[in-house]
Length: 150
Image 1 (cartoon, rainbow, N blue to C red):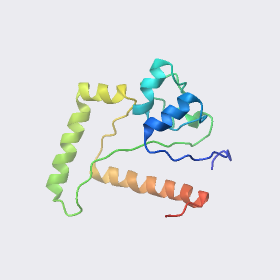
Image 2 (cartoon, rainbow, N blue to C red):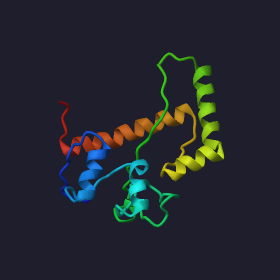
Image 3 (cartoon, rainbow, N blue to C red):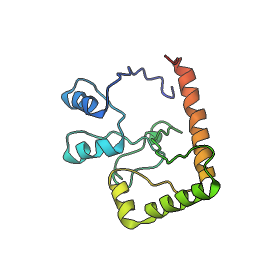
Image 4 (cartoon, one colour):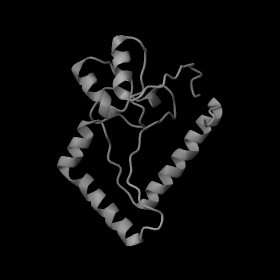
């Protein structure tokens, strides 16, 4: 959408067959998660062209961001912890405190970073705001691409 490049989406049933086809030359490019890609990159099996996050990866600092070539580009996978809507606030706050403590642990932080991840600490309200912003951003992409629910 931002570059007018015409790419054909090929749906795969998971990362293994997608990476197999990429390595075999059946497909030319793959937008894969860092956690799955990094082993191939480190082994020299794949060449990383760019990362899609807003900032360079601490794990792959020599790899540019797409945003360095396409201004304002950012696309990153976000994992979070959810709970049922009526979960008491004290439970939510306790879970948030424990998750933030885990990410603050140097061993946990190192392992996550080693896999190409970036811990995102914050409050439940900040996470809710991020989800709303991402929903709006990707909604525009879906509308632009004319994607319809099946």
